[in-house]
Amino acid sequence: MPFTLATWNINSVRLREPLVCQLLEQESPDVLCLQECKSPVDKIPLEAFRALGYTHIVARGQKGYNGVAILSKQPIRDMGDQDFATLGHARHVAAELENGVTIHNFYVPAGGDVPDRAVNEKFGQKLDYLSDMRDWFRAEPPRKAILVGDLNIAPREDDVWSHKALLKVVSHTPIEVEALAETQSAGAWVDITRQDIPEGQLYSWWSYRARDWDAADKGRRLDHVWATPDISSAAHGSRVLRAARGWEKPSDHAPVFATFDL
Image 1 (cartoon, one colour):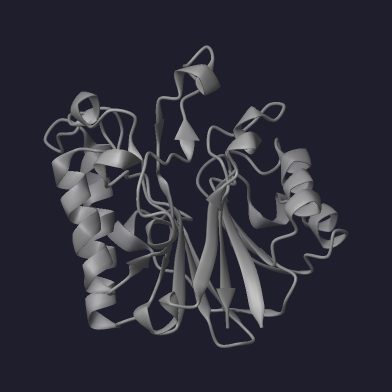
Image 2 (spheres, helix red, strand yellow):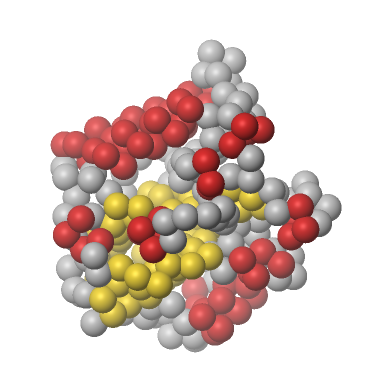
């Protein structure tokens, strides 16, 4: 059976509960993966989501920071989480659908402002997190799996508004792009969004600092949908819901969608 999946860094699920509900009502994905929920699990407004048909929820949370959740119309089984780079952060959770597909929901550390681990601990944590992901996929090659989330890296030149301007900006530096490529290769992951939309500028994040984000359009594609080769050919319909960036009191990220015929 086909199912549609969406991933969205919501930047506080409690603050933006109305936007999550708006997305669920308007777009009705079968599965919605949220990042940066910034809430303990018991404080996530689950009843509002359940009332819209999302009665199956797997989440990891912490007060004020990080946090990941998977909301589903279909039954899902909690498949645990990994504490990459031993940060003690709620940045990963996995769940299995009834069709045997495992969904990994990630929130990779942003990495701070300076792309130098010698002077910026957060950048080092980001690189260590990606290294641990890479090593995990090498040790336990994923099968029949989908990886989504805010990976906080825009890997391609057309994933940013200006490759030249952002080469020394965290999220598009060569060392990060290389680290993400190694992580992707370790799991043989297929970039589903770019499989469906192979050419052209494509963004999922626009800074709050822009006075008019839409007109400036200085975006980056930080949010990703990957799949293992055994199911990647079943994917289609990828899109970024750019309009959500313009909703009232929005997240700085827009939801990214894909459909799988499985």
